[in-house]
Image (cartoon, rainbow, N blue to C red; front, side, top):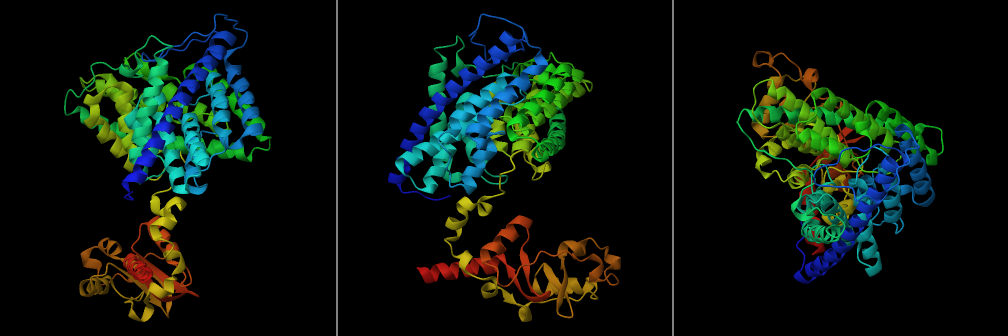
Length: 583
């Protein structure tokens, strides 16, 4: 994390307040647009009146109820309209939006075209309002990020500051529309990475988020009787752990959430790739996706729209297991076809619903074992665990569920399940543009290496082959242990006739039973597919490979021959030496 001079930090904090004000205003307008669109499609064009969460209410803009269209055709109409709007005006506004924000941060210097927030708002309101299975997070993230990026452009700020204001816009938009300022700020800094966070932006993100939340609450208080600031989106009563045994089932929820998250992401991107290959104009693909979503809605009408009302019913214990399972699978398919086809909307709301239904199912199972904890406990734990796994935002997931439900007594269970799901789901994420860490981000690559590693070749920093201890494929495992004991190194290149044929590590050795170590040869257990690097490559390339494959050393190979070995320590020494010479 960079330490910023106080004057520069104050400058950013003032700008983050400005971003928060406009993000809160944008969230308010977008909320109204969603309400108008949903009421028009569901209540005017059809007579579908899905339940709402207790913390939200429709504002009743229309008194006319025509009921002239069947429910199943509405997502197709919305898909057609949003497709025309997006692909004619701003193609980058297609899909779930958050990926576009992440891509802008990492690869586009934080730049967002001015028209994108407006196009995204209109297209998403139509998609979601017409019954498309999507949510607010992607649109408001892209709208908020656009606010930050536009302000940075007006003030001609640096790329670094533009990126920070982009994060502030995301935090402000999410924190306000979900009424979760703490979680919104964490989401803004976490969602960019799978295993890291944008720490430089965390304080400005908090300032922006609470500012946006305040603006949103003040404006909403004038159009609704609900006291938004004191009313979470979902109302959960009698929440809290009743017995330590309950934690076992919450652990099970975390494990199942990881599995369902993997299946969901695979389903989503399979359908997304199918639509990419579809030989049809992009402008019509959301229409096709809408037709299929409508067909799903014939059998599972609960999967249409944001479906938040059914989450409330699950919290209240009013959904039986069979219905919860139906909504779970229906939501996965409907979201994949709505957003995967290019429809404009977020994937966070569907994740809330899917996770809630999973938790409801586990809660029903737990009740068969005389677990006395409220079923709402399991719904909220499932919500947090699933979001953590699918979005790779564990801290934000926990905090947002707490804020959206006001259920702070459940924190230990949320932490347990969300941590399990986060790690067990591996690198799977619904956000394909996420990178593992700041080291892999183009946004940080130059500043973290001060351009030095790009200009140093591997051959200048490596340990040459004549100083590298190697082993033969014919050596025994006992020979490897002797080498480890004498040198302390945990891995060795395996060389035959000067050519690299594999690598063996202590981990490989420990898999061989002690009684067989004198007879088993290195070639029988070594890793044969070795990650290598050329002596002409840069140290930046070497560091990227070490990070990507989570390894500690890279054999340096030229024409299949081992010419050296490069380790993290070698890179650090070369970097320090170069910085010292510059100083």
